[in-house]
Length: 118
Image (cartoon, rainbow, N blue to C red; front, side, top):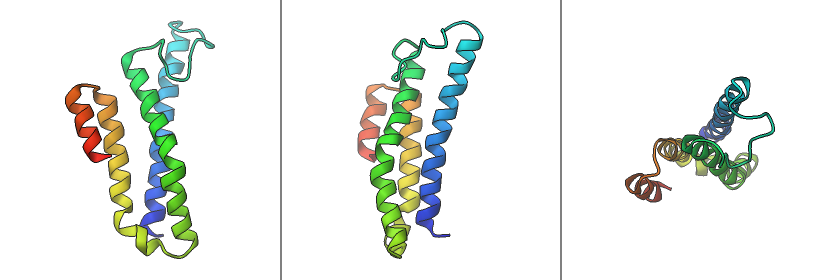
């Protein structure tokens, strides 16, 4: 399996992991009665700042997946993954790092660092 394909799989898994985390927290909020089952909005603006950042981090992954994933799929299908393999893991690492920093903080320093790595 090529590095490009593994990185694409990692990108998809990371996106799903963020979704599972968000839904686990939402499920807890419903089960404890803190939020009605139909009381959520897509950006979590009626929830904690962390949940808002989590929704945004997940959305960032979804926004990037068609472009980067599409290019990776094209390279694989064209038999040219040797072109994308050298940077495939760097792309995955950058996505995970960006999401992690986004989840941890929205301070000016964190946002400035995000701008330099993405």
